[in-house]
Image 1 (tube, rainbow, N blue to C red):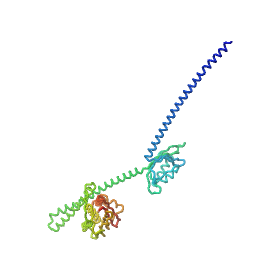
Image 2 (cartoon, one colour):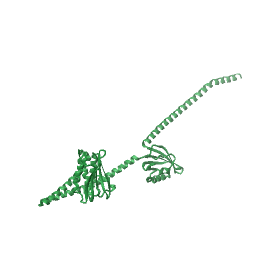
Image 3 (cartoon, rainbow, N blue to C red):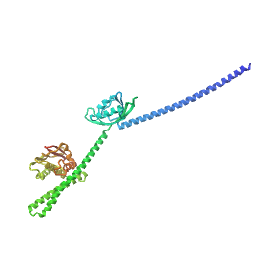
Image 4 (tube, rainbow, N blue to C red):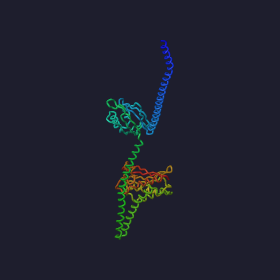
Length: 416
């Protein structure tokens, strides 16, 4: 009986001695579990930090791209009709319509040019009501306190829908495209100029063939008659006609060669000093016998004598073309040649006539090569073009004022 209590006491003592080891084991297990949790948590935090850094980097790059492209990102709430901007990197300034967060859809449409407003409005309504899944429009925006406009291009799509599938949120992007539109306009104008140039070249070939054939036929025809003419006076008359038509032919060829040389830079300026009055008087005397009997030639010089230094041949050519042009289109009245008092080292030479005048839409075109206001008037359509090219080569310019039925005034301003 005494042995049983002793055995129990011994067992209790042994259990008491094992308990610290069990507790220590449990603590070690808990510690290992805690460390593993800490490591896992640390990895998760590190991963999240890396993700945040990546997002931050992407956001910076995203904003950089938006800024370079001058884009704006906007959201349209179809339930409230309010427009808000997430980012707006469009070029701003005084000439810019500033979109404010919370402005209504209709306020935005009112800012557009009337030529585009209805089209853009309908396209957005179709998108908001689900009749289309995307939107792309180019339009003009009115500049506040100004009559000018600038161009924008927008893309948009549905970002969220309700349970019925109706769009509730629209996300879009907008950018300014003034440069692109200017380039497109320049390309259109270049194409139009090229087409016009082709048309004018065709007309030029037709005109040149006619202009060359006319004096050439006279030369060939009159020359073939000369052997049969015995009367000296009649013979001399034919020789004069042959000589006159030869000069016409030479002038046509000279015009074509002159404008080609000047534009290619092959013909250099020859600067000389001479009296402007004498040069203009010589030009007037050259055409005195060619004007209509009902036309009076007059001169109006600001000084009794004016010595200038420039290319005399080119200036004489300009004056001859302008006076020749006046004689072609003036059947009565006057042709007046003169110049104004020199100012700031320049002189303005002018030729005024009371001829048929020029329509306003043709005032600039008359200086184009091969362009003729009246196809029935002799000439290849190069005279005024040559005048402009030569005036530019002398450091000057040529302008015209004219009205139909009231005559014309051509002015050439050159440094002296």
